[in-house]
Image (tube, rainbow, N blue to C red; front, side, top):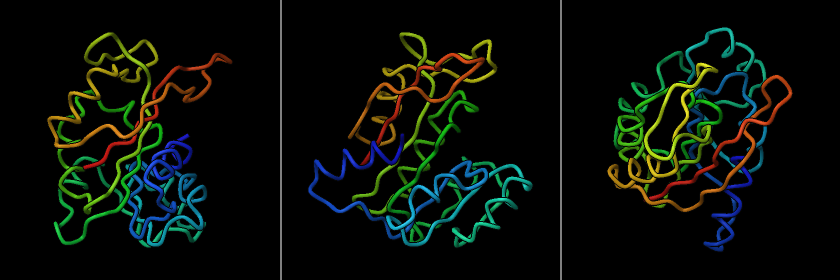
Length: 178
């Protein structure tokens, strides 16, 4: 889903889909790194689960893997070590207030960099913790939070983020830039 959204943005800019430095937030077992093969140079991953990182490490697709909270990790990235792409696939559902993360990502993106992610569709405004114990974010909240962090919406589309008990879970794929 995220790679398709990135393709749409890159085509609109007439740029090839390739990123020199990528940060995969909540990388889990490395599915995004697999999808980005041939489209990325150095990929760094961060996740809370050491077990997931061991699976990702075995794939030999990452330059570096870190056990850390995604927001704290991004906030600690030195300004001279920025990324061309920061991606979060099925991760923001575990965060309510996205303002600290969006601000940190805005500070770590290199000029022309992109922040691509998915989230579950939410209420008309704001965000809420759903019965599924995942956060649901509204389009209005995402756009306002991005703007406050100095990021602009480059792509936004409704998507099915996953299945839950056999039913589609509605969500959004979004790509932000500077």
